[in-house]
Image (tube, rainbow, N blue to C red):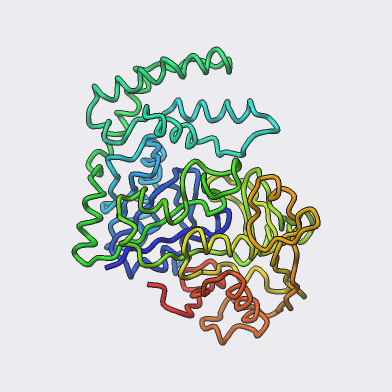
Length: 428
């Protein structure tokens, strides 16, 4: 059976949690394959309960699914335990959550360095969440990281922490004028947390491949979005991992030939959080309207999202980079009540029309959107459950996005609820 990848096709916050939840009853395993608690998914159940998930896969809300935090994720032990406790308190069964032994840990010194570095950069800051994700990935690549499996061997853990703080304490004290961290205290703190989830640590790479060999279906869930990918995003205003579909194999241990479907999540308009270029951004009343009606506040950070019109240049780019087979278009209902709805179909850069993603950082910053005006609709579409029930202009908008994006729009979200989704074509 196949492995399915679910990715954000913009700058994140597209509604991947809703899509994962929708597909939950069709799959056996759901894997988070990269990122950390710098991302968030919101899922609204049919009974109106709203869940904000930051680290744990969205499939935790669907009974019977085994959820995996993959090797490509960086895990803050304290955040993990807090999230698990919150789910337990609300009656959610968390017994089927596993954590890769090869995932890396976000240590207290990663958080400290992340916060002081971002403050030190001032106006040049990248816009990180200050949760230690970048520094944890830096240590991983530098081969001095602490992995989840190290929680099972106190001697190795202690050696790694002491070696790391020999250098990082000098940085904190001598460069940033901050207090040094005590290695003993750090080790004790992390070990105490680790004891509470040690039973969840597993060779998930082996388990996932065995599941596929048994004919079970695995859904690989990315966080953030394509334009935040460290290789393929709007660098340097990106995350520290690969949210694109290529990162799914590396972050889970599942070979790329196992993947048969790549589902991209697109918002019916565009948002991003943090610094960086945003060609279709609206710094006016319309931008505020999209923010208010769409509830555009970060699940994890609580930061207001920047808003703008739909960008087909980005969608085409995402289709190519990820090999997208299907799109799930979310929040179409937010656009109801507008006379016209613009779509960015290309950019103009220094007098030149560019139909594809500009090659250089300079050109991305200088890109001016070229718009095509689509007629709007005034009807409330939140109760529509088939594509034919949508107003004609809403259908035309979806079909134009499909044409411009290069992949079929297989599902359309018309509200935040689990049942507020129009399925046009089967995605899995």
